[in-house]
Length: 135
Length: 98
Image (cartoon, rainbow over all chains, first blue to last red; front, side):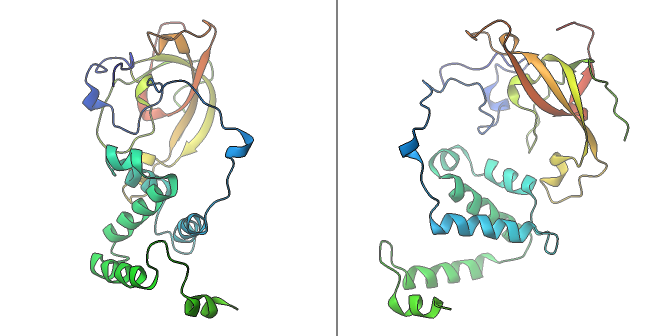
C-alpha cells in the first residue's frame, strides 16, 4: 500500500487498520459497471443466500448479520481479496456453524468428499441426480 | 436508552483501534463531525458479532464530516461531506465547530 489515510492518531500504524476496513484507500480509477456487465446469480450463489436467510430466521436464530460479517473479516487478507462475494459468505457461514456446534468438521469433510465424488469439477450434473430432483 | 447527543451536536470519534468486529470505519476515528440524525437504539454489533445479545441497545447517530478533513490528499470540492452512522460508544463531546 503506497499511501495510508490521515485517519487520526494511530493512523501511522497500518496494523491498527484491519484489512477489510479499506474505505478511502487508493484503489485506482473508478470503472463504473456497464449494462453488459450485469449478470444473473449462479444457482449456488442463490442457494448460499437462501441458507443464510434460513439460518438467521426467527425460528432458528443460528447466525446474525454481525456474525456473518465478523467471519468474513476473519478470513484474512488473501482470502478476503481472492474469494468472490458469496464465497466469502459461505466460508463465514461454515466457520460460524462449526463454532456453534451446528455441524462438525468431521461431518463437513465427509459430506464434501461425497459431493465432490458425485459432482466432479466441471462435469454436468449426473443424470440420476437430475432425475431425482424432478418434482 | 436515552441519547447522549442531540442533532447539531459536535462530536469527536474516539481514536481507538481495538481488534475485533466494529462498525466505525478507520478513516473517521479521531475526527470531529456533527450529528445530523439520531437513528435510534440498535443492539451493539460489536457484541452481536460474537454470538452475544448485543443488549443494552446503543443509540446510533448519523454524523457528517468534512471530507477534506478525513484525507490529506483529498482533491474534491471543499464543500464535500462524508456521512457515517456511528454508535454512541464511539463518540465524545467536542468543542470545535466543523
